[in-house]
Image (cartoon, rainbow, N blue to C red; front, side, top):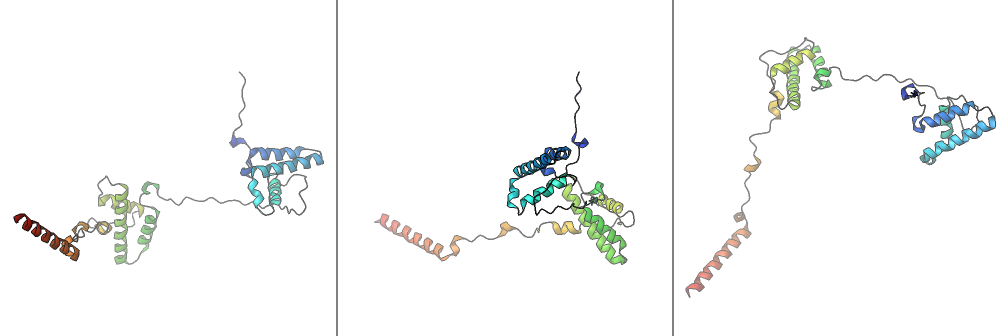
Length: 231
């Protein structure tokens, strides 16, 4: 049985400019191996024309030919002996190392509270005034209960669950007492029961002058009809 050697992208050379694809990069690498200078120059110019056909929108850019030649030399890693058109400034671009972007999530087990809650708890722990700290702590706990309710609408929400989560996020440095209530924001978030949009009085037709006129006119018509029947 014949064995087929497969080449995976992970094993291939990294693409310098992915928008041109791997075949253009292979053509440029092959252009380096051409020994005849004139043939190598013609081959390079044809590659640039191919790059223009792949992205014809480059014609709308000022000095697009210079840009294509810059891309050509960049893919070739500036290690190729060909001549660029006159006026084309080719300078090797400095390599920039990109730093690692850290993910801001710090506590994935309690992501339903949000990352800002952890920041607020850290500020509450650092507070020196006990009275302000207690008020700020209760506001944070009430918000955590509201956030927990939004994510778990079908479950019963107990203050003990939120208090334990608060203590975990505060690393045991701050917590609640059994008497603390966490319904501050929940009470303010409830709709106003005293307001009932259906309780508005509808404007009756008899309140307008036109309605009273119509009723009086109808009454006169009925009287005249009864008088005719008697005759």
